[in-house]
Length: 284
Image (cartoon, rainbow, N blue to C red; front, side, top):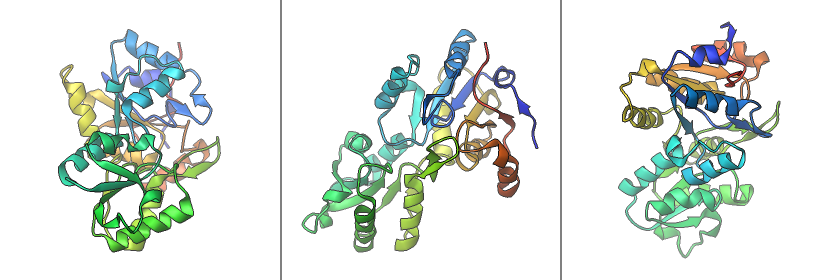
């Protein structure tokens, strides 16, 4: 098992830090205690950073505002790379007309609307408009009636040969210190198996998000992948995605991965982080 290191000793070795959001910067209680010190330290040391998140429930502006309400005023929309941004690009290129139905909240539909599409919550799809639906997007685990609307999604995808886009691939997210809740990625996996069609996925561990953030960071300074650290709480998204893209990774224990289970999960999955830290806090 890798030793547990002090986060500052790790972060000092890199020019740019990519952070996951939920489970690293914040959790079910709010900000991870002491995390503001980390961003103060990065600013003092002139280290660049980005939030690379599978959260497609809100726009980058709304996500930034949620951080501001928690006291992280430096986190601007330009610092946030979300899976919803990549789903938006796909919709702009591949779905040229008609209705795009979505599973999620009204806020999550921002990405579809900003791509110029007519949007409609899956709960509002009727027999009268079903032939106009040319895409379905899995955005969030909230904003609809699970039983009714998941069944409606299954039958829509059985009747219509249209793309299904998964804008958030997370299977679960931390609900309390010990419990998790089912995320929309798990619902998409279930429905994909039922309808027997291949869905289009955006978000970690896919490399597109890391490439997007990497190119943004390289616009500011000369970098190689060896200059960047990915910080995450989940082996199968944050750590696997960072590893696949060629980044060093650090697993933290403030989210999905519990210290008691870490060694077993790493051994079983074969997904090995470069480092392990208790949290992403720089102690000052």
